[in-house]
Image (cartoon, rainbow over all chains, first blue to last red; front, side):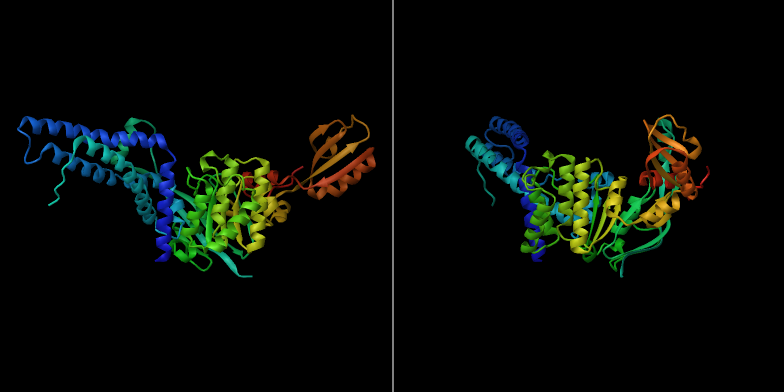
Length: 141
Length: 330
């Protein structure tokens, strides 16, 4: 158990470091991350305002809260594992994973766990920006 | 001595789809596919003892990598038995994988974007190496392979040779007892090849590791392996000492002779391979060597004369070309 915890933490650390290697990639990733919710937000907010302030109970501020959370959830869900596995098998790289005394699935789970830490770090400034601009109103109840 | 690697009538056959080129054939293959059965490895048997360094030779497509993959558990054999360190490799038990390594010259384990030190740390966690032991081994390898100035550079910024040295260091951090090395010096310059050879020899000596090495560079084999196993078309051609290979497969020796004067015709003594001024190199049947050298010394004003086995590359080429011992035909 201790071995697996160490393995997961080390792999996560590796994933975070690998992500930090490419700054420009992250600038573009952040643009992609914010562009989509902003478009949806503007469209729905406009419709809401034209319909007297809300659509189906959603006001521009509740839309803002919805898309803020949506941005995080959507980016946390992006994985390339199926394509990654296929490519690894076809290219022969999977052999190297199979030679390790740890099931290859663990590597993917740990690596993505690390990558997603970076996603959260990138999401925080975008969330702050969207919050300042669209003034979200979150009512989880 | 205990056998660490044992193969008994090991075979691997592949069912490979084939079709003609072109769109029509491609479309047709959606409905009806044709296959050929390729016998990559055919009933080979050998065993390797603890601490041996064995050269595994064969031309491209001979079945070397397929055999190494079966030995490391990446492929299931079609038939026959294989046993490494008392394990059946294809079961890929964790205890087995902790004791072996497979280094392939064209595959890498290190994280491309990060300095190798980070990948080394990953290896520590994969093989759960105690920190003190890991640090000691890592520093030892860094010294032996002269990696000190390289370990902080991202792997992608290293040259091919530097990367290979790093790969080998990373692959051995858990101190495997069995090393399967598939062309570890592929594409490297002579200095790098020598450095890696020295390291492998040192590792074998220090840890009494068993090494099975494939390489197309005969210098690797000559430097590291007393014993060689030769396969061709998946079949075992030779298993024995390197010197016996030369003995068995080369019916000729090379005679180098330097004369005091130029202009002599040496064709009657043997096949003249090269001539540089008064220096001649002859290819002479082994059985006639004593007689020919005696005649050369008696007939000509000889300054210098030496008799050598042919270069190992030539012998191996003959083995591959013929697949059977060469006949001494004058």
